[in-house]
Amino acid sequence: MRYVASLIFSTAQRGAFVVLRRVLLCVSIIAILTISAKIKVPFYPVPMTLQVMALMLIGCFLSRGVAFVSLVSYISLGALGMPFFASGGGIGYLLGPTGGYILGFFPAMWIFSSVSVRASAGRSALLLLSGVTVIYCCGLLWLGVSIGWGEHLLVLGLFPFVVGDLAKAIFVWGLLRADMRTLVRSRTRVW
Figure 1 (cartoon, rainbow, N blue to C red):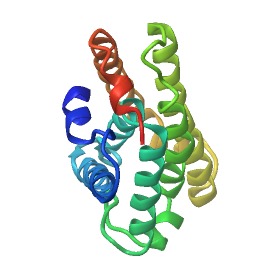
Figure 2: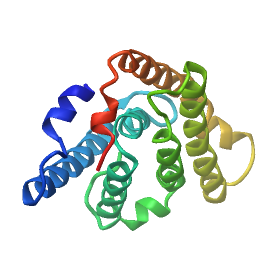
Figure 3: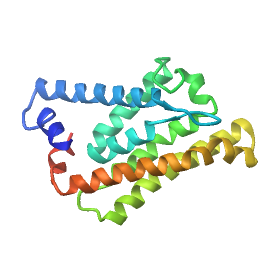
């Protein structure tokens, strides 16, 4: 996967062509985040999306600069009303009960993009789980403010998603371990 990205988005050339490639990469990442938010796995009380897995992949396989520019663009466009989030868009969506999870994407992306090709299997797993935990912490804090504190907070905002997000982290961890053997990352982790 990284090898294909390194061929398409190589930074060996300079000028307008490189800028165009970078813009296309950011647009592609925004599209991936939007599509992953729209793919819903039916869960009760709210459906689970593939957005956390997309964040892990973007953070782990691309440079921190590309990841953050794309994430800021995605959330900004969503806040301006583009229907990029799971159930719509707009500033009201970010201020709603799930807004904390979306704002938790920023620190989580920092953690996900800290995974390096030389990281041990344990360190990679710890970073992936830490990023997911940060998303949960931000989301639960905001959800608690929105709906109140109590057992129902964990029932609505944590318990239904833990197993799915753990499976996503294991999947991404497996891709990282397989990719480590190819050692292509150094070509794609540049901006």
